[in-house]
Image (cartoon, rainbow, N blue to C red; front, side, top):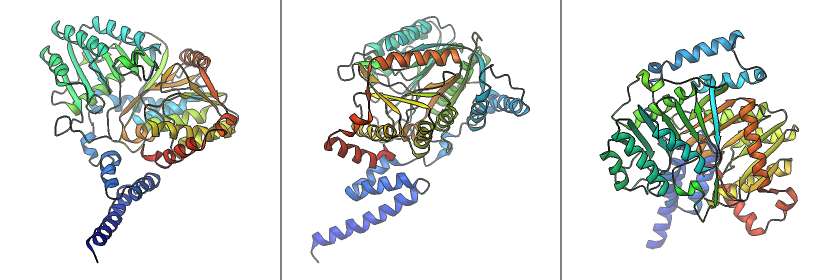
Length: 479
C-alpha cells in the first residue's frame, strides 16, 4: 500500500471518528448534527475545526450562572405576580386580558417582571435615536451604563466617546461594555482614551491572545443604555456610521429602538448589572441609586432575556406564543428569517388559520448564506398564503413583531438559530394598544417603500438562485 493510500485511509478513519464526536456533542439537536455532518463530508477533517469555531455550544454553563437575582428582589417580585395571576386578581390592562398567559409564560420562563407604568418613544431612524441618546447622556447626574454588540471608531463612535469622556470628567460614573467579536475593529486607542478619562470599559468574552478571537458563538448581542436608572434604551441599533444610513453598501438603515421611562428601566438595569458583573472584576453593588425609576406612562412591558446559559430559548418561545395568540394579523420585520421547525410551524399554522401574516425582509444581504436561506423559508410561507415584503430603501435590521394591534416585541433577537440558541439577547415585550398601533403605522409606511414578493414571482426565480437557496437551506441550522 503506497503512502497516498495510507493517508487517504487515515483521513477517512479520522473523519469517521470526528463524525461520531459531532453526533455525541450535538445529541440534543439532530438537525444541527446532520448539518455539521454534511459539512464534515464535504470538507473532511477541516470541517471539524469549523465546528469548534462556529458550532460548539457553551460547554461550561457555570461561567454564566448569574445567581444574584435574589439580591435584587427579582424572585420575590416574580412570585407575587405569579400568585396574583393564579388568583385571578392580576391588574392587567382592560382589553388585554387575553394575553395574561403570555405574561405568565415570561414570568415562569425568564423571571420577567411585568411593569405597567412606562412611557415609550419609538425610533426608526438612527440619527434621531442617537441624537436623543446623546442628549440624555448629556443630562446624566449619577451614572451611564452602556452595552452594545458593535461600536465603530468612526464619526458616531467618536460622538459617543466625546460624551462619555465629558461626563466621566464631570464625576458621572460611566461604564461601557462591548462585545469583543462584534467590536473587533474598535482599536486600543479608542478604549485607552475612555479609560484615561475615568470610564470603566469591559469587553465580553475577550480572547486569550489579543485580536485572535475564535469564540464566534456566545456573543453578547444585546444593546442597552441606562441613564441614572431612570431612562433606558433597547432595540436593534449598534453604534456606527452605517446605522445612520451613511454606508454605500447598505444605504438607509431601517431599525427599531425604544426609549423607555418607567419601572421597566429597573429590569433593564438588572440585566445590565448581571452582564457587567460577569465580564468585570469591578462588580456593581446593588445600591438603590441604580434603580430610581420614575413611573411616567401606562405601557405594560416585560424585559425578556435569552442566551446559551439557558436551554429554554425564552425569546423564541415568546415569539411562538405571540403568533399563536393572533386572531387577525401578525406583522414581522427581521433581517434574517431562518426559523427552527417549532417557529416555522407556528407561522404556518397562523397563515392556514386565516391570520394575515406579513413578513418584511431586506432587499440585500449582509451575510449571503443567511440571505438565501431566508428566501428559502419565506418561499414556503408564500405558498401557504403569507405576504412577503422586500424593503427597498436600504437595509432592514428591525426585530419587531406586532400582533392584532395589541401586543408587540422589539429588541435584539433575530429570527434565526444563532439568536435563539447561541447569542445573548434581550427584548421588550409590550402590552399596549397605543404602542402596538404606532408600530403598525410604521410598518405600513415601510410597506409603501417595499416590493411585495408574490408566489408567482418567486416560482420564476432562476436555477442559480434555487441552487443557492438549496445549499443555504441545508446548512441553515448552523447559520
